[in-house]
Amino acid sequence: MTSTMLTLSTVTPVYSGQDYLHDFVLELDKVRIKLKLESAPIQLQEAIFVVDEAIDNSASILTALSKEFDWIRVIYLSRNYGQHPATIAGILHSSGDWIATLDEDLQHPPSEIITLLSQAILQSKDVAYAKPVSAVHESLIRDLGSRGFKRMMEIVTGNKKISSFNSFRLMRGGLARAAASVCSHDTYFDISLTWFTNRIISVPLSIKDQRVISGEKSGYSLKQLLSHARRMAISSNTKLLRYAGFAGLIAFIASIVLVITTIGKYFFFPDGIDVHGWPSLFTSILFFGGLLGMLSAIIAEYLMVAILHLNGKPTFYTVDRSQDNLLSQYFNE
Image 1 (cartoon, rainbow, N blue to C red):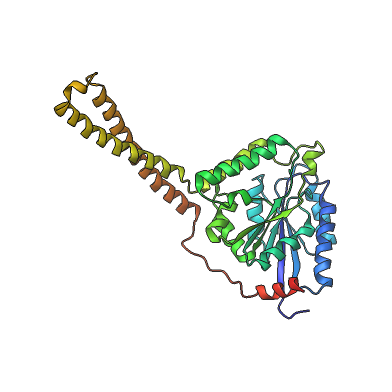
Image 2: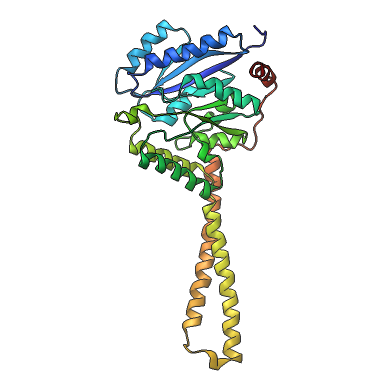
């Protein structure tokens, strides 16, 4: 076994996973044993479960599992905060060189963590998201709604990574903890990740939400999903404001051109004016409307800069990739 050993942590928010946790831990254990038997330069050091005020017996099940497996750590939140805050809490309690986040219900196969890691290393990336190769929920409304919203946010914000966002992700540990540490109450964690790196890839994987497909209620309600969407919008530096300002500028310039045209026509071609008063009224509306549009966009831009500052967007960040060759040699064997 190599003298330099990297470590892997997993983080899993838990809300209603009593029917899945035991099998989930066994699958994680298979990954841990596989890496150990192959003398891999990275080992699964800890599996962190964040109990987000679970509504079933998940907490007691995890307590029993933590006694059986010494690499399991259980964190209990004081109340229900939601998936993103629970994920952030788990990341901040982790210590691994790499961190994988997975859902509790086996929707994300633990065995694919190694696939995500291999692709991240071989392509020299910092973050690897799982990309479902087919409909995750097998629900037309939910699947299309999710993809449609992400696509819309990409257009509005100009952030081309949004369509990659998925709760099954693998990240460099230091980078993930830095991104988690700057997250405020309404910061969307994946947006925060893009503030620290643009080395992000999507890895095609087979992912199915068997809980929803089998007719069970999803662990996340419509209200929680809408909350995720709101956080994403608030955390993003939306370019829509700039588009609005540009439209205001065009209207302002057009009004100036119309003023000059109207005055010239009044003095040189007065017979060509069929309705008096209408050109000046239309030009005035266009002038002041464009002016207000520009001023509103400028104010909104300043507010967005202030919001991003409050959200913790960094000026710069440094990352150490010097140990990637160890993993690269392992995956190339």
